[in-house]
Image 1 (cartoon, rainbow, N blue to C red):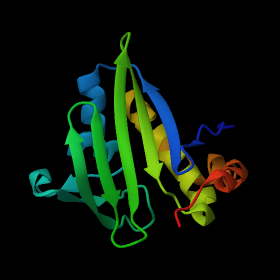
Image 2 (image 1 turned 180 degrees about the vertical axis):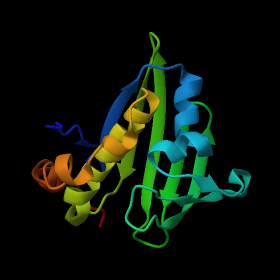
Image 3 (image 1 turned 60 degrees about the vertical axis):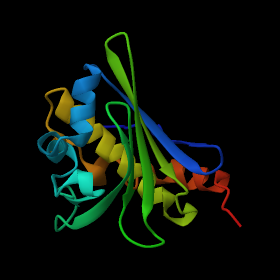
Length: 169
């Protein structure tokens, strides 16, 4: 399958990807926040979100690692801002949902990605977002093949985008 890259750089410091879900806003929100729904395409989370963090098990990754996810802001059902991982290499990711005419546009914004990592990070987000679409449309997220369709196939696109990133300092 030939998967076209969709990512772009906005404001010089954000990798942005979008997907459209033909679902009500409440259903799209549940797909990215409900532990059972999230488990279908990304991985389940455990913990108490009111504490400001949960632990996510990345089931589509080798070894199904666990990662702490810090909830920076949650404005249901339209905005979720999280930090994935610890320390200075943590990823700041925002999900924004906009509904119009029975469809929801999900916008993933990865703030300040490391330009050196973009050729792997970009295809990774493409992969996970396509798993989300598969899960929400009755498809099989496990049929989405990272090695065949995403990396290294999309690496060149994201390598070229890395030159557009402006680093602070």
